[in-house]
Amino acid sequence: AAAALLGAAAVAAGRRRGVAKAASTPSVVMVKPAGAFAGGTGHTVQGFLRGEEDVVSGGVTMRLRRTCWNLWFKKSTYKNRRKKELRNRSYNIQMINRYKRAMRVVTRYVKGVRNGRENPASFEEFMATLKDDLDHACLTIDEVCVQGVIKKEGAAGRKDKLCWYVRRVAIEKGWLEPPEDRFEKSMVTIGYKMPVNYKLREPRPWQLPGWKSPYMLKREFDEWKASKKQEAAA
Image (cartoon, rainbow, N blue to C red; front, top):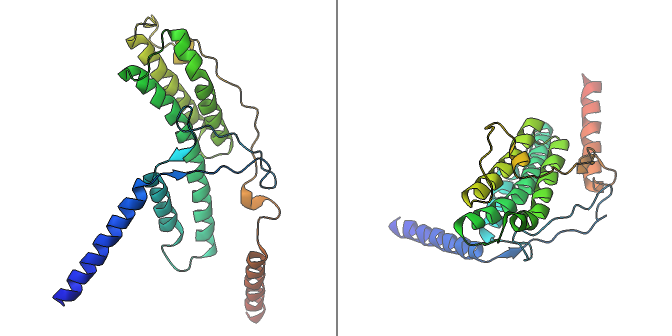
């Protein structure tokens, strides 16, 4: 029994070392081109790091894999209602990660300016460098809100939080004076104009034609046929 316990502990330690080794290796995120799916708009995705390719650490990839595993593979079988809940939750997680990554690009640069890692010469240079990423983050938040993943009050609060952080660092650096009105909007203080989002709500991927495979259609047909037999027998 003791030898069996020691063997199990050695196997578990080997697995942990393997996971740690996999988490230390970077993985590249591949973005599908526009028109890869029916009805797709081909969203433009900016890099996570300024001037670099979209590279995410292996730790993030492993956490996402564990999330999918905990969502779908917790049990061998699920009821149809539970499957739909897991499908919707996976879509919401993907959309939430999109706007959080866009916000992280902005906050990382602003934090670098605050810590002295980035050294813009003036407030104009600071805003000129930040404007494209800030526009992209605000538009991504608006798109996620239009898709119904987050509420409009939450979207407005997240965009205001980005502008507030930019204003705070600009005041600390001495580029701006604190506003006389304490309730003045941060975007007004820094002279930033929010981009207008013209996108409408799009259907979910599983609502588009051609999404279901023949095996899925056959399984749904068999379930429908079985339910009809039960109704006739009753």
